[in-house]
Image (tube, rainbow, N blue to C red; front, side, top):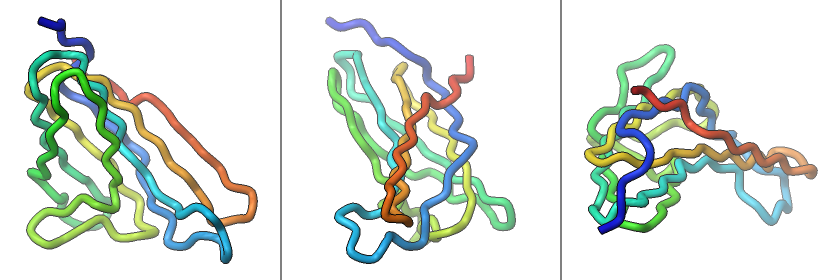
Length: 125
C-alpha cells in the first residue's frame, strides 16, 4: 500500500486561456492542471472555476488513478454545458477525496517566442 502525499484542497488563483496562438505556431496556447496521486487509492477531484463577473462553474469531476499522474487541460472542463471562455481571467479550486499534489502550467503561444509557465498550486491545510 502506497502512502498518500500532498493535500486535499488546492487553489490556483491565476487562470487565463489565451484566445489565440501565433499564426503558423506548432503549439496551441493552453493551460493544464497537473495532478500527482502517490496513493494506491483512486483520487476523485471536484473542481470549481471562479470568474470576476459571472457565477462559477461548479462540480466538475475528474479522476486520477492510484499511483498515477493526470494532466487536465482547462479548455476541456465544462459544467452543465458551460466551459471556460477564452481570454477571460479565472481561478480554480481543487478538492480531492485523498491527498494529491497539484501543479499548474500555461503555454502561451500568442507570439513567435513561446512562453511556458509552471507553478505549484497553493495548498490549503
